[in-house]
Amino acid sequence: MARHNGSRHNAKGRSTAALADARFREMLGPPKDQPWAWMTQEMLESRAYTGLSRAAMLCLNRLKLEHIAHAGRQNGALIVTYEQFIEYGVARNGITNAIRELEEAGFVQVMVRGGRSFGTINVPSQYRLTWLPDFNGNQPTHEWRRQQREFPDTLKRGHATP
Image (cartoon, rainbow, N blue to C red; front, side, top):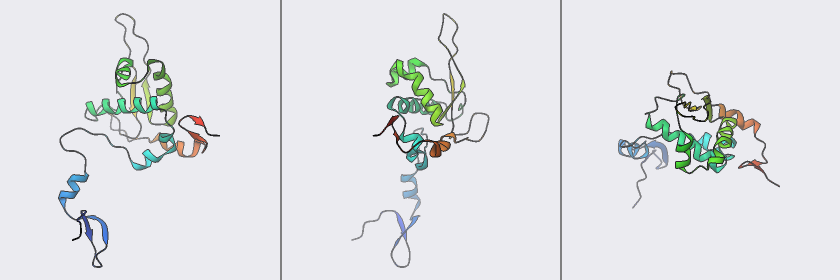
């Protein structure tokens, strides 16, 4: 008995890329009962992404969570405080370098550079994820793609390999 994997078959019985029915399209699609954010295979396999440090990955994930929390409508004005990065698991002394790394890799653009809070003065940084449209309806810039050409093959996770 053949297993049904959801693929449509051609006249010779070979599987095609097309899905057989809506049930399988729904199962493979984004979850309907919770918010989500996408990244493409090209992004996940890029040198820009695979070269990120753990702290940069955590910061990127925290920024994606903030994007999700605003239903994708605040990209370019995403605010994540140092305290929120710390609560997510990023060491305080690594946040600045991680954000700089994300900017250099082209995944994040800092739209407003914040500063330390003093008393009632509080100017938080605002971020934009470059592979998604911003809140003004501007198209994604995909700045991370430039790293495909600029990262040397010897760089991996921020360190030169011997």
